[in-house]
Image (cartoon, rainbow, N blue to C red; front, top):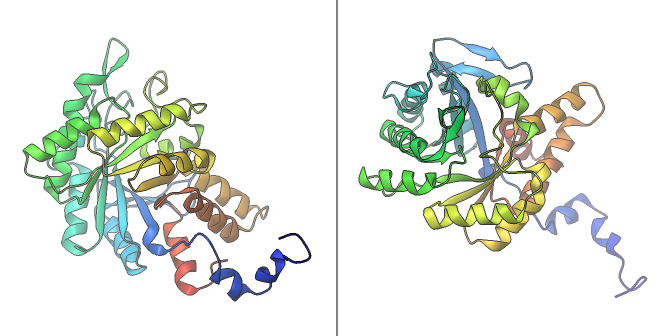
Length: 328
């Protein structure tokens, strides 16, 4: 129907009508809130490159998780900073590791909050890489056992879901097999399936003190120019038993999110990473952008691309706007 028979502006005249015909819906229930756990008590250490985010001791992390649950945010994603680092990242799979402590404390206090744990070694290793290093190289197969041990230790502590982020080949199968052997057949895996070697991770590496001490992660994380490879990576994780697949980062990879959603029948998560958060925060503080509007537009774009779940440091800010009805 050409103009003047069809006038698209008719359906844009009122805010109520625009909301009624909106194609993509965004709800608090779509959000996952990442949190950083550290040893100690009463610690709430601001992260300079991520305004509004803190490294939290377990007691403070429980308070933060309780706030999130009170805002109807259904899930948190936990990262840990160890007391000490070593070449094999042994605190990652220690019974009294920081993530294991945080999981127990949250589940004891807020049992209905879904607790997801990041499964990786980079925060825990002295060299800052995501796997075992031998002769200056990250070795794939020796890493798989440590990742599986880490996942099982998290689930034994009470984690509801594990999320391997290391990008080692075969790690989903190794984790699935080990969980099943341990009697945890019902525990789902959310795999970081298409995780790119991105410069958007800078603030996170500051927050988690996980920057590699030599080289970089391009031998295991994906080349930003590759989308077809992302489909292969996701397909491998699906075949190995992933229940949810993830694309990371989100905003610069909306095309990949859309292709993954169109190709596979599983739920898709997208991680709106620290650099995305920091850019919007910085521009908002300088008055260059309307922070709230840009935040909501960015999160809506991620959902529109096909993400069922959005991991974001903006989770509480977005939930506040959505619950108040003030979201644009």
